[in-house]
Image 1 (cartoon, rainbow, N blue to C red):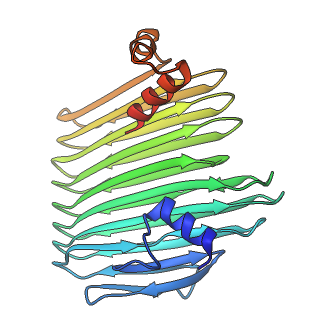
Image 2: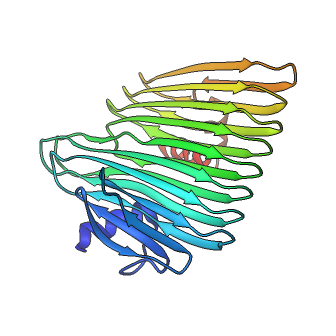
Length: 306
C-alpha cells in the first residue's frame, strides 16, 4: 500500500500501522487487494458477480471484520455485492466504508450493495464511513445500498457517516424485522458547495415486538441539497421511531419526507423532524468565550454531528 492508500484507510476504517489485526478484506480500484480470515470468520470471493460472502460462525464473540474499499483511479465505476451471514448468537463488529481519491477530470464512483442475514440471537454493530478527496474536477460518487434481514431476537446497530468530499450520494436502506428484533440506525451527513445527498429508509416491522429507531443528523451549507425519506411499516405489535434533525446554512436546501404506515392497532410509530439554522444565542454565548463567529459555528456543527 502506498501513502494515499493508507491515508484513505485511516479515514474510513481507522487503520493504524500496515494492516488490520482482525479478519479483513481490502478492495482497491475494483479488485481484491489483501485478505485475512480467522477461525470463526471466513471471507469467500463470489463467483457470479463482483463481491464477497462473509461467514461468521455461531457463538462467535467480540471479533471484528474490516471490509474497506478505496478508489484512486479516476473514471472508475465500481460495483460490489457483499453478503454477510451471521450465525446464531454471534456478536461481532463490522467496519466498512469507501474512500475516493480523485485528482483528475473523470468521475469516480462506488456502489456497494450489502445484505445482512442475522440468525436467532445474533448481534452486529455495523460502521460505514464515506470520504472523498483529491484536487481533480472529477466527481466523487458513492451510492451505498444496505438490506437487513433479522431473525428472532437478532439486533443490528448501524452507524453511517459521510465525512466530507462526496459530491453525490444516494443512500438506500431496507430492513425486514421478525419478532423480538431491534434495528438501530444513526446517520450523520455534511454537505457543502454543490453536493447532493439523498437518503431513503424503509423498515418493515413484520414480527411481534420488533422495534426500530432511526436518527438522521445532517448539516447542509452553501448551495448543497439533502433529501431524507423514511418509511416505517408496522404490521403487528411493534415500535418505530424516526428522527430527522438538520442544520441549514447559506442557500442550502433540506427536504424531509416522512411516511409511517400502521397496519395493526398495536403498532406504535413516531416520526419527528426539525430543520433550522444555528441559533444566534448559541453563537453569542460561544463568542463571549473568545471564539470568532466562524469558530463558534464550527463548534456547534461538530457538536451537533457527534
